[in-house]
Image (tube, rainbow, N blue to C red; front, side, top):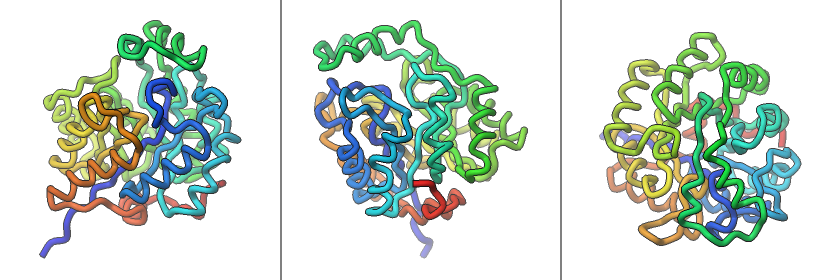
Length: 310
């Protein structure tokens, strides 16, 4: 009997899209981020994708010292693969965004494949009360904000981290980003196997219709052939439907409170682990299995958790 296919679950624990006032369950402090990451790993995530926040006001930060407040504790308590952001927040420059991955040398880091409009301003229609002064303008001013990732920026991040043997979660928010990834593969800056993370449903990127998902998959298949692993994340209410499509189409998936605060219509997810358990139920209902961290390491040819700098 053939063994069930293994599906890599990535959990994005906290990020730059949501602000602390949007959900009391969003991890903010180092202890909360640590506990959320460990809970997601216990629930079945092979990889945890991590941002840091200023514990005083919840604002996104790329200060490596803030990451150091929770990374060693996660590593000491779990075998989970740790994936650090190079995206940070759209308000940050490339040098600032690079520092955690550059200094801490994780097994995996995320990397967006292009500059784009990144509109969060529509959230003001759903959230009215904010605890911190920075939250409302952070959302409101996003209608005039570009999330910068030029060809030069991307090359700089790839070249800066090459000696660290960090592999990249290649984040593609639109079809053109797949072609940008292919360009850097042709330049020899991204080595196989590739982890292509297709992102659906964020304002400024591709939509979350089934045809959008299929178009991304077809294009990635043509560009990367047998050299890549395809994963998806769906923003907001699209999280579980998009993840289910990917799983059924032979792909992998990302869930977590960075991408969606919800665990059903009008119902806030109380933890990242809840979202991992929900998609794991889908995976197992399809007679598949969630990959363990070591299985994910083998599939993606990662350097191992003993070769990081934290």
